[in-house]
Image 1: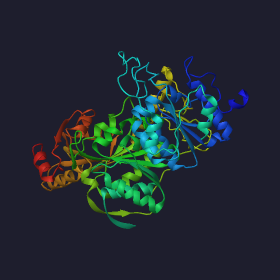
Image 2: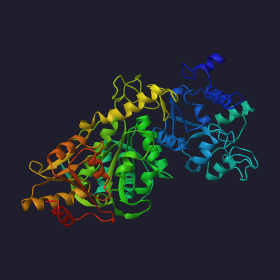
Image 3: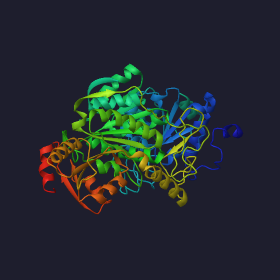
Image 4: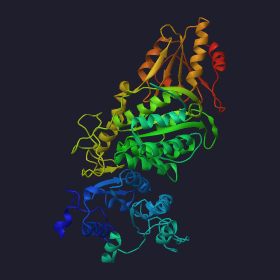
Length: 187
Length: 369
């Protein structure tokens, strides 16, 4: 099995860039397993990401076309590529800070337009790459580098948000539920 | 040859579609909106993808995505929208993505006077995004040239794999004039070479071929510092130096091939007007009027603003007594001219939201003659 999955990874890469204990490495494997089970051709796939730890899941690890964009701008870049070449299967993989904070406007508009994008938000409920600042998905009361007295603000429920905006499908799983997560990605 | 009667904004659309533009994303903003309106209709007729996005950032980023999917892509904006597009321009420069960005300049700063004219974005066009990079920027003085320079902008973007800016002004965008369209126009299409490294060349100033998404090339595109295959090199000084040098040198060392200008009465001129965009129309009128009075005055009209036409400026500066630079800004190009000459540079600045009239220039020039 491990041998079979190797072909989905860019040759020459030997390790993931993620910290010990982080779920991003697991998510990386689950996305590839979903693609494997769907029997998608990686030559027809485009992975688009923004800035942050989660954006490193596809870039440079996935052996397909990858567009690693500006912070927050994965969705508009993906939209342009998908609309010009509808044959591309376009998957956006990025974090909560990237997709829901700085890119939040693009996220709700993508849901409204329903331009056939799969958006996977690897939410760790914090800004990880910059060292642990509050994000729009951080729980109320959580201690972070920028909420040392506890986060006073409500987090987004991203599923409710994008369903309200018109998304065709929204689901939320933890990397501790791998089979359900694979099934959800396939949907 | 076919003759049309168009506005500058309409001519930009016709130039773009003639050059092969088939993706446009935009966001409404005065005085550039007619470009978006017309291209949405023209794409219905000729086939092309039009998107009105949620903001200017999304507009330029989707054009970049479409460019990698194989499109000749464009966006257009004005004033504050151009400010929002700066991060996309920097990303396009770093990832060597051909796109054309039209800025129909209006009076600023900020919201300023949305329906009034200025050329206040010349320096923003060059320096608006972070880090050291180069753009190519052209500036038309007529509706005819808005058409021609738009085609040229696409050719340059595809040839040098860089963002190319068409810096025009409200007065050209809304001016209606006759234009002549000829049949044979040179169109450059991007160079593809399957398997070749998409982000590096042997030469220090080379332009690599560009792959297209969906063709099995497994392209890796990133705005981080990268090697010739697109792999991130975020702490390698050599990779940073090599990439940034080439991104700059591929434009700077080809400057003589890129820049375009026109000279008028330069042979014996002691006073030379350096002018561009709409203002050059008034400048030429003033120069001709003063010539008729026997004054030794000439004019250099810049069609390219970036990279700056340095050698022609140096040559003219060596023979002239005064270089007179009239602008609808606070001397942005005049300051650039000063970098290349030791003679007197007289900046004439008007920032009242109106075009500079020939009589105004005749009066101002008379003081130097």
